[in-house]
Length: 137
Image (tube, rainbow, N blue to C red; front, side):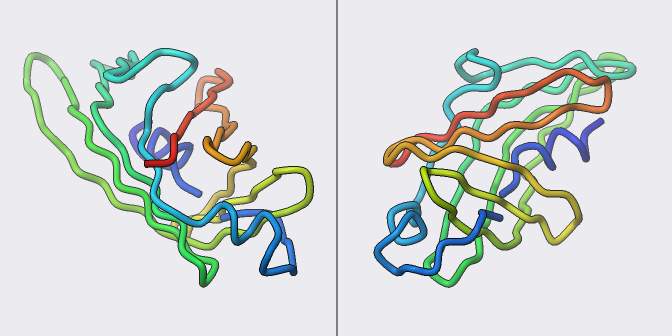
């Protein structure tokens, strides 16, 4: 479950060839603000415990790469462990604000970009649809 939760938060975007298009507009640093409409911290029930997401940063670079850093706490059988996970990959921007993030660890996520926020769409291992919202800093 943990790998999936990280994976749904990671990013690589659908192609725009113009330097003045969505690709150049999407570059920047974003803060994770909500998952499924809930403001952070967000708790997910997982096998044998909970994962609590406290913070996240998405850095979208001009060269077509990105880096995502997530801070969470795993709670299992009364034991707590703080984790900082970092994922990276490539992204491309498409028309009308569409983005595609491809993770080096595998997987990809579609996203929308409205000029300020990046909203990603994913599904967890239990088939639950997830909406992940990042806001430009």
